[in-house]
Length: 183
Figure 1 (cartoon, rainbow, N blue to C red):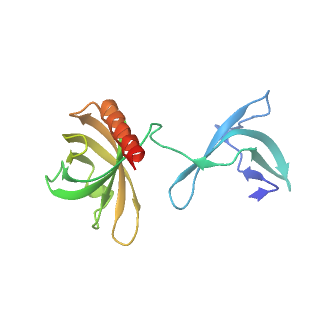
Figure 2: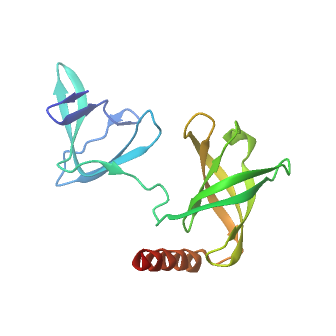
């Protein structure tokens, strides 16, 4: 329930005790995942105990706007290249588009009805023509979301790579900057 920019939530209980935030100057970060599955974060939230209409609540307040949460907590480099995904369980291969990559994760787009439970652990191969290298990754897909009619975006963690991901991402950034400057 929200009243006058205050969010009322059920009290946070540990065991039989209500967690008390009414001590000192404690501020928290609050993450909310909406129906679309995308998390938002509010930082510097104040949490207070309150009774409203004879019911106990925690109230949350932040004078800052919520912003999208980067689940990977690292820079995501756009790739936009086609690749071949091999599903470890079945050895089936699928053509994918590599949306982006970071030091710890990857986002892939599939144009079919594949579900997250159909994939799990994977190997991925693609050629990055700009950097003139073949990239081979192994990982595990952990989330999916529908993009539109038939396309799905899958997010995963990277367990192994044949390239130094930090150097690769830096090289991709430099190439993007030089392309922008030349136009």
